[in-house]
Amino acid sequence: MESLGDIRSEALAAVQAAADLASLEATRVAALGRNGRITGLMKTLGTLDPSERKAAGARFNALKDEVAAAIEARRTALEDGARAGRLESERIDISLPARLESSGSIHPVSQTIDEICAIFGEMGFVWADGPDIEDDWHNFTALNIPPDHPARQMQDTFYLPPRADGTPTVLRTHTSPVQARTMLQPEVQKMLKDGGSLRVIVPGRTFRRDSDMTHSPMFQQVEGLVIDRATHMGHLKGCLTDFCRAYFEIDDLPLRFRPSYFPFTEPSAEVDIGCSWTGGELKIGAGDSWLEILGSGMVHPNVLRNCGIDPEIYQGFAFGMGLERIAMLKNGIPDLRTFYESDLRWLRHYGFAALDVPSLTGGLGR
Ligand code: 2NL
Image 1 (tube, rainbow, N blue to C red):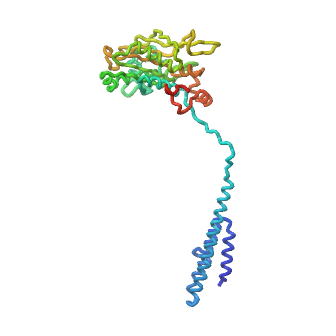
Image 2: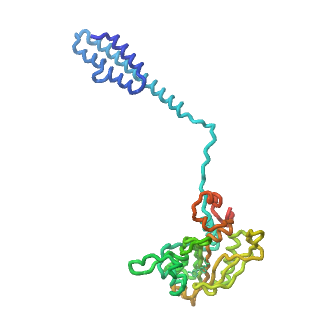
Image 3: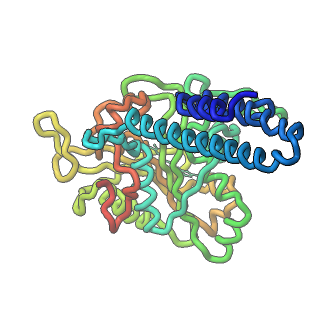
């Protein structure tokens, strides 16, 4: 029989020699596993003379406990060593300067929509929207645009395949079909009947077959509509004057209402704001030049009728503007095409701070 002392010293030496957790486990199996040397010793107890069995059992157990304790101590030492090694190798130099976070910014189109909605919101307008794909009736017919009108021609409008029932469809060429859909809502008609006023502001994408220096096939418009029993041309002038002065943040901005023509309004007026050109540079405000900003007019009786509203009882005004154009004028952006190039340097230059939501009291366009 092997000497107990040899088994002990060899097992303890193997434990101390284990260089990692895997070889320590191999050592444990060799000594204390099912076929280990110390387990083997335990199995010999039955062969011993009963008079020796108790003392031998006590010595074997003491040896087993000693080796098990040595294994645990070695395991702790190996684990501590591994942790110390990781702490050393994964050391972070907290004295290095932090990497800059890049923060996003609000696109000038979004900012302009927010500013315009903030201004009209203060005047009691509510936001409305509708589908980009429209049927011919809502985009043209409802708006008193006759069948032979040039705007309906293939070279100006993106025509899409007709619906299953044969209805012609288009990409909307203006946001006006949204106002038509709004007027047709039974809740809106009831609200008007009950003496209320309809005031909607409608920003959104519009599409025309145009692409050059100053035209993009997709562009944004903002239109507005007011309907009730009493609204007249004076309200149109006051509302659009207040809007232009608030948007450009110039209290005494001069305005000019110039007679014009739209199929959906009668009478119609275009709105110009005063400006000057000094040294080739545009300055909005007092001056001897005018810049066209908006189209507007009193809603044509045919449009009201088409939208289920009796023109003998109700009337109102409407207006529309090209969003990129007024964003360019306010923010000094020279080229319309840059709006949709998704150039991050452009966006960093012309973009607006996120969470700085425009309001009339908080400063519109900081
Ligand atoms: C422009 C001119 C305008 C309207 C849009 C409108 C809508 C309805 C009824 C009557 Cl539902 N009018 N919209 C009226 C006048 C002018 O837009 O230059 N837009 C860029």
